[in-house]
Length: 66
Image 1 (cartoon, rainbow, N blue to C red):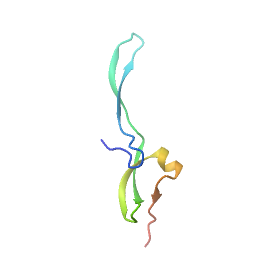
Image 2: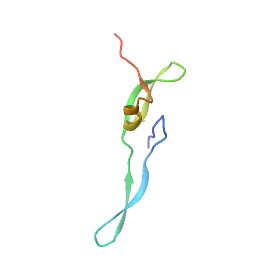
Image 3: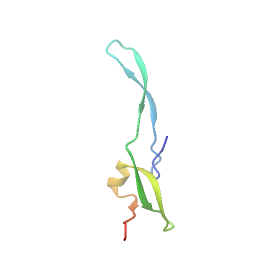
């Protein structure tokens, strides 16, 4: 599974508990988006970034020029 390019957030494994205390496996998935980003060396690359990092402005998105 993919993980965030900036912070490394990825899918976590856990359990869901029912009312009768039965536990079933489940996955907590990170809210990842695939964006074109300008990296530190100036190159443009498609990477997975979580929405928390996008909103915080930790990555610079590449602007489409035509």
